[in-house]
Image (cartoon, rainbow, N blue to C red; front, side, top):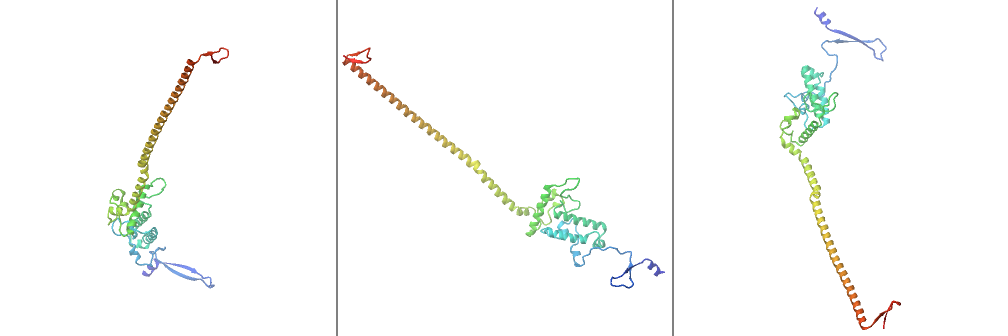
Length: 296
């Protein structure tokens, strides 16, 4: 009776296989079917046994995106993408690891956190938390905020630069007050010191720009009015000189005309005097027919 019940719980499946080189009778292969065994395969990386513990999901609450990916803040996009594929193979809800160690809800939650962290590291979302605001076009709504996108991009670039130089995470303490969980400064940050160090280049460029602007506007506001005043004084001086020259020339001309008139008057008086003297010494007869003066 016991053997019969055990046999009834098992099913035999027979398949006939006939190789192409065998022309004889087909060979029958029997496989034992077990109801508790899955009929499909899952991806299990057995080449590296320690990778499961190495890429385990963080156990503390509210892990950051880099902690979920087990990568430094200076990691490149290629490293982030490669690590994302490894995490998907390990933490997918249908993977062997998730089915063996996690409940369906917990596996789904961890996988959603991994996907959200990947979107945040790629720069397509505003936070590493699930259901965060995504950048770009979505049908039916316009949710692209260029200012928030630029702030998030600059913050990630700043943190990557600080981590690459060995300074750890950095950022302003005011990020978390208005930017949400995705903009809070990381643990161990040094507050505004990292911003001052990272902004040294920007401040240098700004100072050079202001200096160039001042040097460019200096001739217009200082040298140009001085040159205009100098030109005005020169023109006024030349005009006064021209007026003095004209006055002197006019005076000389008037003196010359006066002298000429006086000379002509003197010559006329001398001529009249000579005529009077001649008239007293001789009788002057004027012929009405000949039209000339004859002396008697």
